[in-house]
Length: 283
Image (cartoon, rainbow, N blue to C red; front, side, top):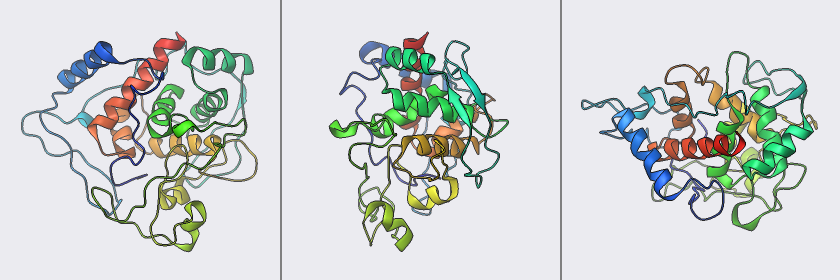
């Protein structure tokens, strides 16, 4: 699990131009989803262990993770990335540099339409293609997560460089047990990513906790290193992490996968709204 506590960089989706599904349309989507899944109760956090999340028992109706909720653009033919060659990762421990080439013309056109930085769009598309065999995960889903976590690496006025790195590191608050945050002590290995020798912090555009990064790390751009601050690497690691739930096009897997990334029903709905908006923009 990437994070056992609420999002450390949750973004107000109405604060900037991306995605532009706000106001009445976003409310309508939320109401329809809530009605569809019968959300009469929330889900439970399993404390600070980071060992996993499960939906709460709900005598009044199913929780969000019990339902089939998949953004329309998850694998829509109009938004599937074009590629000239690709191979897929096979396991969570396989961080060997992948081989994939996203069609540059498709990427430029899609990035403009979606209003996503080109390096971010390319990272999401490549990660979608290189997801573990048997797992279908759309680039729009990864983009939805990337928007909520860090506005595609541009949070706080940062720029996303061509190499997938933000102009300055994106770090979450210290996970010191205060408020609703878990208490996760830093190690010598984890401190190298965030500089805090006492408490861990979520790192990079996809906000990985170092211990989770150690499990799911990936070299998404084939530069010989796996770096959570590099969106190319972080997007592929996120795809691998989400795919541990199974094929995101099957049954309730999409909702369960996003819920495992951040155990919050609001988070699932926000990622859905963002992914759906990117689908609308690129049709």
